[in-house]
Image 1: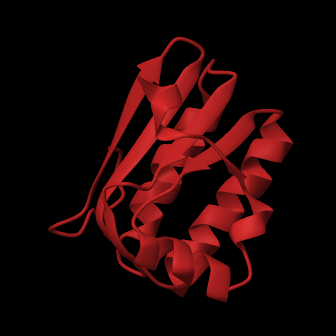
Image 2: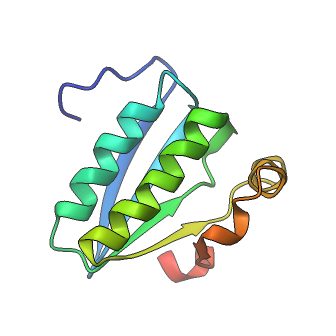
Length: 115
């Protein structure tokens, strides 16, 4: 994953599906793990993929640093001219995005689109 430290219990994998890079973080997205996700997203945006999808289904938790990473990714996608969308995680995660007032800042993709 590069030289970014990845906390125990957190991982990020990137799966290429045609012209889409699917970024899948697993575990808790917080101050300690956000840099690892950001590094993976930067690589995905630099890749030849036309579209980047961030699949949140394997996330257990997100804090303000994680929210910041998601918003930074949206800005990076715009700068790179890439389509960027999220796949919804569990209800608590979606509620966190809603309470923070950022849920509507993102485009959402159905999980079925990743099959």
